[in-house]
Image 1: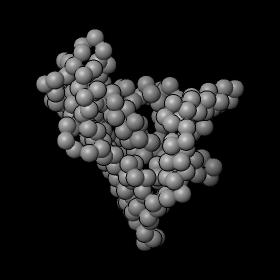
Image 2: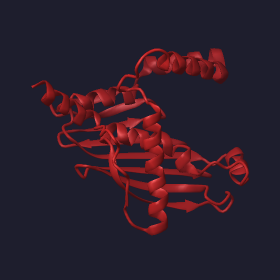
Image 3: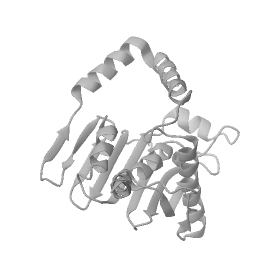
Length: 237
């Protein structure tokens, strides 16, 4: 819910032009993670291929398509080679607005997933752990939404059906979404997934070279929600 409403506010230009996005993902390194990440035969990547995937996707949602990336990763001594435990990435778009992504597995720290969007006329802060949206709009209005009803509904469903049934409903919703109709603008496609993987690959290459790495332009440029709204109004006019 906070992501949904924040995207709507940005699309309606309520905080002006997006200049900076900051995403912070932190997850405890549980024994399960330490166990299978230490097995080269099972490891499929480090923290960027875990929490970094949705974080980079959110960066694109708010900032727009990126053209360059700069970043670094740190290897955990207990993980298999190539499985980083901490990563920092800075992405740049066509207008030189930036999105920073920090992701890490930490042994002692609690889970944290936050997002900040800074615009020319306002700002938004999202706490994904607690489902909370706050900030200030261009009109001077203060935004604070704790989503109490939505959180209670989610907690009730989880307690009643458990994670297994939640996953079944998620798969059913995915199938019904893509079957027999075109995807809407707010729905992710395989194209979006490919772009996110290109962003993460650019971070890995930047870590090896120490330089900014160009992310090849997409065949069809996709703008951030705010820029897409303005572009649409211009075409209509």
